[in-house]
Length: 213
Image (cartoon, rainbow, N blue to C red; front, side, top):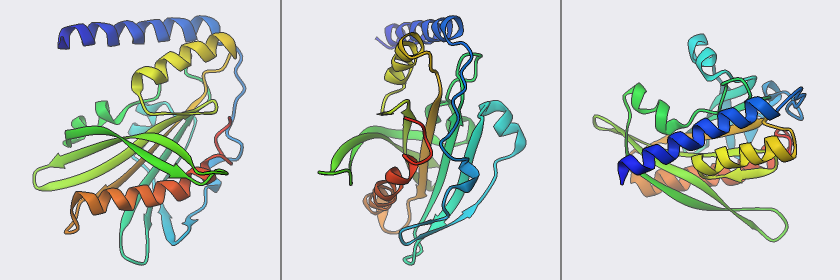
């Protein structure tokens, strides 16, 4: 079964690359506002902008991005990263933490789907991906999702499938990746997850002002 899944995943990746390279032409899609103007105050959270090493940005192939470390009055912390890709036609596909984190020394010990209730009229339910990471005695909780062309996507496979569909039907391959990380401290994993979900619910309406639908 693992071999079968690997073959299916490889086939999807090859099909995705072939379709978007052949069909997507002349894309001029940009963020609604530059991500450099992203707010550092979100509810009770105050953020300090940060930067990755230049080599990481080169590897990501991202066109615009925002990285910041937020804290609230209770001393909880969340790292936010938003990466925007104008086009995914030429090999600059959105990277998944499932590929990047193990290379940084963090082992994925659990992966699941979490549901958020986002204020949008009558509270909209949104699914996102959750990872539990461990490096020695340290643990982190990660929530992430793909926010692309009006969709919030909680699956790497569906992200690629929608990329093919939209490259054909809409001639668009732009997309964004949103990742939240918080450490697991004395409050345990449940407390860390609650912190991330609280931040994510406040974040999502703001993202809609930056990421094109």
